[in-house]
Image (cartoon, rainbow over all chains, first blue to last red; front, side):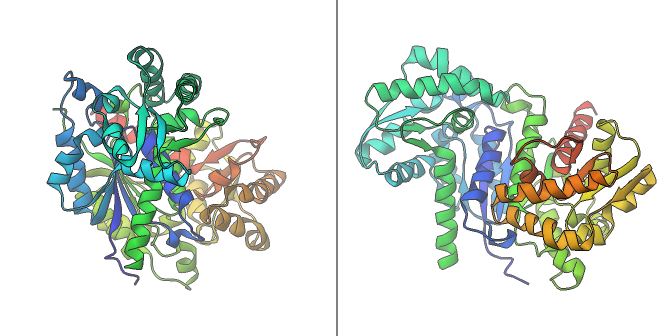
Amino acid sequence: MTDQGAPMLGVLGGMGPLASAQFMARLTLLTPAERDQDHIPTVLWSDPRVPDRTAAQRGTGEDPLPWLLRGISGLEAAGCGAIAIPCNTAHGWFDGMVAATRLPILHIVDAAAEELARLGLRGGRIGLLGTEGTLAMRLYQKRLDQRGYETITPDDAEMTRVVSPAIAEVKANHVREAYEPLMEAAKRLVARGAHAVVLGCTEIPLGIAAGPAAPFPIADTIDALARASIRWHQARQGA
Amino acid sequence: MTDQGAPMLGVLGGMGPLASAQFMARLTLLTPAERDQDHIPTVLWSDPRVPDRTAAQRGTGEDPLPWLLRGISGLEAAGCGAIAIPCNTAHGWFDGMVAATRLPILHIVDAAAEELARLGLRGGRIGLLGTEGTLAMRLYQKRLDQRGYETITPDDAEMTRVVSPAIAEVKANHVREAYEPLMEAAKRLVARGAHAVVLGCTEIPLGIAAGPAAPFPIADTIDALARASIRWHQARQGA
């Protein structure tokens, strides 16, 4: 029998569940494969009961960390060798998760930075769309600024009026309704000088994919994290 | 904190991985939900290393049962309360899996029968597309005949020339290339008197979705199993 001991990729998901499903699809489609057995063994822990991350960041909701740690324990028990989390806002609890596991956790913002480099952008002004939580915690600014990027975001009024409602539409399975407001918000960032727009919430690529393609570079954090996961797997295979 | 003890749905997948991702997406989209927390907590064990089921049935490949049981153990350890398997051919090892777990396993052919009933078809001639393994093991005939259906399938030559290569295309991520041969095979079953066609391999709906819709009723076994999973979850919620 083939080596059953090879570590599986662990995916801490369900935030939201459609973004996790899309992550699994993109992980599969981006993997060079000719048959089932060429694909990456993966365990997806999709627990949509994890309390709302933005509400927790605001101080109006339950702490998600115990739920995130429960998922990590499940993935450890399943024999996973690394963890990918297709939810940007959950990375606000990254340090707490890292402290609780011996497994490496692939950081989605580092994956987004690799994606920007892949698009030929190695610095300069970048637009960021994400949840209020991700923006307030400055998850992107902290990691992208030191790589030479300047991150700009929608203002508070636009977040409340356009971006947050569009993310909620995707979470309610209304993907098409999210396209126009998200594309509008992305275009406004480009008008303010962004050379590319990072879709820094994994619901956003689902909305943006529901209409015509953007006429500017897009860094999709679902694809970015899928590519980082494939690199992790390939490095393990080569080892 | 919300009840963390509620059992999760276990999905034994990876056969193939794209079909499992699609199952997760359809499970999400078919669930009535307004926010993340309304969705079904799920663990997907996506292990594409499970040996080829059709080759095993033919006697030319390794037995997949130990791999299937390993996944079931993982899903049990994760605290799952039932198991769904979005691979029709794997149901050839259904009895062996049932014998090895205390968890209920939702049978994909029973789910397909529910889907036919939902489409208004409560008997009569039904076309079946599936792998050579599924056809040879008569997985559908055994369960559908006793519900009053007569199952017809492509002949051996058509399986070899059209259906099996199209399934392999999907497993190699070439989804669009699979559309025409699969639609051609489905149409031929309708020409032979089938009132509907069951897509009895979870790769097939991916190919069939890559082009114009069929002008006859289709029972998609990914959607069928997703609906059966939602019924399981709703029954647990009501309990």
